[in-house]
Length: 285
Length: 320
Image (cartoon, rainbow over all chains, first blue to last red):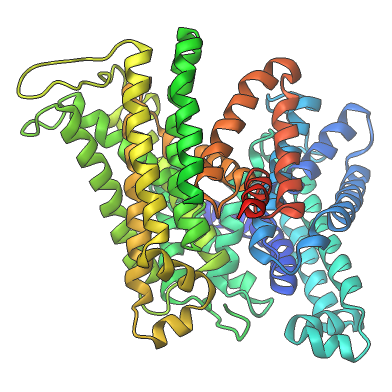
């Protein structure tokens, strides 16, 4: 039983990490845009829950509102900022970095720098014999897994997904065939940001919500994408599994600090030695 | 000559400032000089070398810690000499850059966005490491680092006042700025331009892009290390924040706002942003960081060459 809890913790961390990385991946894989503000969008998702709680809005309604609000913010960001620099991919790193600073500070100004907490809607635990685990964490895992599945379905099985993948593979040809690439970019960006908001809202009760929380998920998210391979969407599962799994298991076995250092170094080694990622892919740069 | 003229104007006017400024402002100006030096190092590797390093504070921090260890006499056989400290600090930063660079750039190598994320991750790892390395002060860092000491051969000439140390820092910065300005206009500078614009053809002409990349990475790291070393002598304090994420972000903003492709603009970007920060943060309080973030975004989108470099190059283009 002792091994079971770290394993469940690991899978729960992996699922959240994949959810965050998936949003990054849609934006990066499709447009080559590195969205450094993704962590802050995730943070805003969590702050929507703080706000919902203080206004007495039920938890699950908050979870519905968060991705819509963050997605709308994503729409604005795309319209005002990212749209102008698609042709300069490296500058998107800088511009979205500026955005992340501004968003972080805006949250500090509104909510203050201290950390907030969100109460989980389900406080009971699930137990079989000696084994017990908070139900809400299991709910997060199930929901994350279904959202990840839903996103894969959207990109692999629907017409929208087909067009999106066409735009990723051959933007010029796709545009010649009458696909409005600008529109695809915009909606993909919105979906990516909405996923970040949803992830933030879901895990808000399990972590302390503070203005600096974004970075701690952004960098592992990026490393997951690069480790897994930026080409196929499934790369994110492999990368998230590798980065998240190693991190949470090493945290239990050694210490959180050693785990983070080890994971970052391992990820850098993988990225350097297999730049196309574990899965490989023709879009690798 | 265009670049040198600007360097003379900028540094000439900086040299006069301490005569009028108060002690407080003189010591602030000393900090600005160091930040400017740090910005020069990033401008070289990013603007001229085309290597976007999101973890430039790695080298600043290494320089800072090495200087602290040497001048505090923490490694026994090495004398706690100011000059030896500077040389070792720049050397260590450069050596680390060399090792890191050979690992990252060799063979197929990584570049662009991948390199940016990887260097950022390395800066975060090192910050974590230093926060937990208790021999080196851990999270609290190293305190009581001796000030600039110009003495040699057993004599000691410690500079505790802000004006003498300002002029020492000023001289170092002028020398480095002139050296860099010469470097980017030398044959090596031409190779850097080629590396940035058309690396394939550079290889075709028989140059090793790896060698050029490594050289510019190491030179830039040495300058960043030097800046870090000088920083701890006037601050007296080396902490994990000097090696990590926040400082890497700040220097990137200074250089981007100033203009990465023009050394003196990057230098001025650092000084102007810091000055604006100390004035405007009194007026705007916490809103200042928000404003800085927005200015940074606008500058990237509308004036990618930099807020200072664009008008400066226009001004000087007309005269020619």
